[in-house]
Image 1 (cartoon, rainbow, N blue to C red):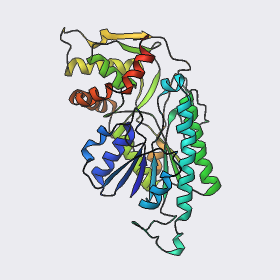
Image 2: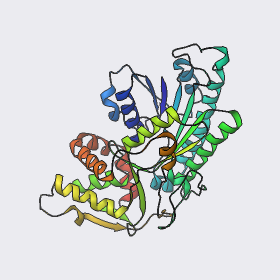
Image 3: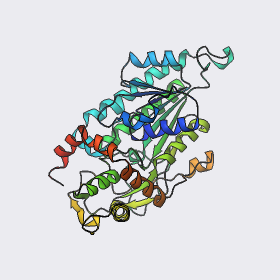
Length: 365
């Protein structure tokens, strides 16, 4: 049994779906269901006894110990985070509370639980799976944004790159990473950390670049591109990311950090052009024109990092993982998923996301 936090969000829900597609091991799903948490992502698991959903906060110091004591998981995988740079600029407090304070409370609850487990010398533990201290893992999912920004010709981020976060979001994630590291070195908590590049794929909330372009294009709206659109990111198909997390959880060395990337560096404007070309092919505009005509350049956001790039050689060398999807195969699957799941899109757009976009993007789009 494993406990997964933040697992009604984009990456977390994909991870739970992938996990249960490949394993009969039960997942305890803890999610606060803030505006980006969407149980519709997990609708296919509604009657699945292997999936136990609990609405709650990782910072709830009463709920978490009860869940851990009741279910006795062998691992905790932490996706719970506020995750959008733009929103962190407009309202950083939520990011500090969830990503730093929430992670602290989560670590404290997990540490107490882990210390209560029997040591291997004392025999198998009591409870559902007989978990001992040596069996347990805490896997913290983080981001490449903690490393800061790269120039065009600098080498990609390795696991030893200095932390240089440039937004409230990345600073809060950097702080949470440091807390996880500290709990390993101070208390011996068996932790693993992954730092991933930009994910894309099904169930991606439409405030991020790729789903926003798809949704706006189909709605006949402007496609807002920050600055000159030459900000470069490495792109990772979400299901590849899920497989990497499973690999690290299974084979990762305690206390280590593993960078997870897709080996797909592309400028934001190139991404928008690719999305437009796929939509031109798969869902042409009624007037026969290209969706590229809807592209609008808007004022760049403050502190916009110029380039991120992940060097994912360590996880391939030490654990044997590498991505399966190319960007070309992954982006086609992604665009087709949004075309095939308009009900999901419409339900998302009817909620708090729409209010937030109207408030913060109205002047730009």
